[in-house]
Length: 423
Image: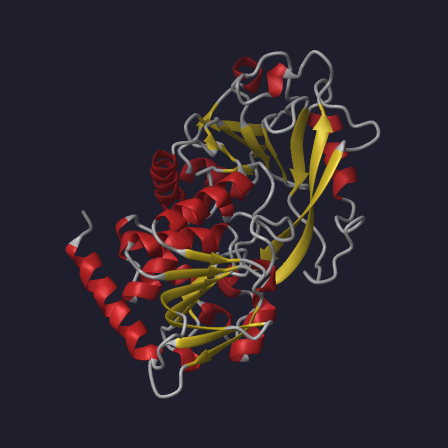
């Protein structure tokens, strides 16, 4: 049974959509979501669960590999240097569980999470504290000398705080659940215009092939294309910079293949310092392990250098492996597999979750700038975006201890570094 507030909210949004409809025969929705990556798919699902009439538009094929929501492994962790994120991760973890139960299959493989680095690293110490991690002896926890840790390093584990998400499968799951709740999905529909309806509430969304859709509310989650679309529809310069990332898979040395698997209890891990390296256990490609450098060069999402766009990431990771995991991972010849991805970076690496404002008021909600660490929080972000669109406030976030004040657009007004000046 839905809460009584859900009925009233659905009725209110439905009336708004009806008022905006005007002529008969037009395609009208309570909520139009632009962008069908993890954030948009979760937002569409959350809105559909509220009983809203939802349209989810995607500029490419559904489940494409051209943005930030594809592939088969994303880390989930609540060990965060910034205290604003663990409450959102914990909310998301609960929602991941609810969605898996509804779908009848799993997209999240639990694992421990290991945070390590120099004891002098303030970000590491904050992450350990915020995630409730406990210091451990890695030689005892993972035998066989997997990690060669220098003196003066912290090694701390969150036993229940890690996990690996199958990204493409997760996006597909939320899209399927959204359709199950009545949402309409349309791919190969590039949105080129979002305008306020003349003489009434709601917005009109136009695609590159000339099709128009009308909605009471609109949620924009277009990832690396955010700054381009926001500039076009609102004249706003939003500092969301796409970066070209390479996902790197390395060969595990013969005889150690099982040691580094999720089934054997190998952790997701983050190594703080220079370079900042992260990894997921061997899972999607048997005999290989994903070990990545957290960084990449700026790019234009419409014209990427697919071959060399990752800069010197592979060399930096290889040097890290040779120093810290030399007995278990092969670096000769470089990574076996390289996959392209994008981050959408804000200057402070914090999200943008806010009303677009201006002439749109609260009719358009923006989710953007997830800066390479948002996927794990997709279900929480989706619910927040849906509640902002439908109710004008995100009560679930407030109840979970998530403080949305950190994610406002206006933090960049006259302050190009955003939250960085306060952190």
